[in-house]
Amino acid sequence: MAVDPTLETFCALYKKLDKNCTEVLYEIYTADIEFADPFQRIEGIAALTGYFESLYANLESARFEFAQRQRQDDQAFVCWTLTLVHPRLAGGREVAVEGCSRLRFRGDRVCEHRDYFDAGALLYEHLPLFGTAIRWLKRRLA
Image (cartoon, rainbow, N blue to C red; front, side):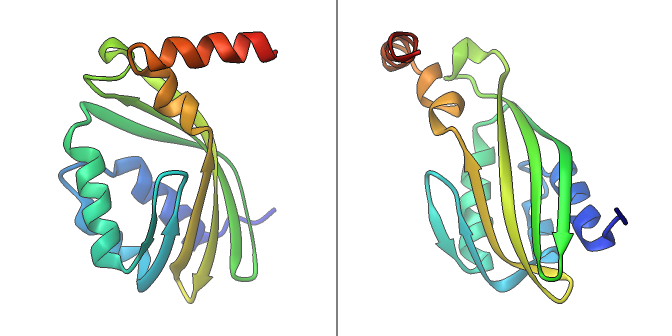
């Protein structure tokens, strides 16, 4: 399958994204971007930039590793692993979660971005007390 340069640009930008460079989001998203993940639904590049600034503000580190990616016409899917360190999650140790992004392009920019991942694996399982209860419940259901 041929490499799509616009999709590769998207992945490359996320590999270098951190709290010091959220303004680069303007390079890959349209002004009217519609973004959704398990925690938020956001419309507009200014709101998305603010969301990312607040997310990255308390992170010690975050990195994306991309695996499979596929694009057909204006639709694309990208599988990734996010590894982050937050002082209040998992005792400040690394937390990794796998996910997938569904993207829709308008020209060479993303106009819709939807992330799919296990919010519990990213956040809830790593909170004191609450995480213990969720891990216990998962073991009971398995």
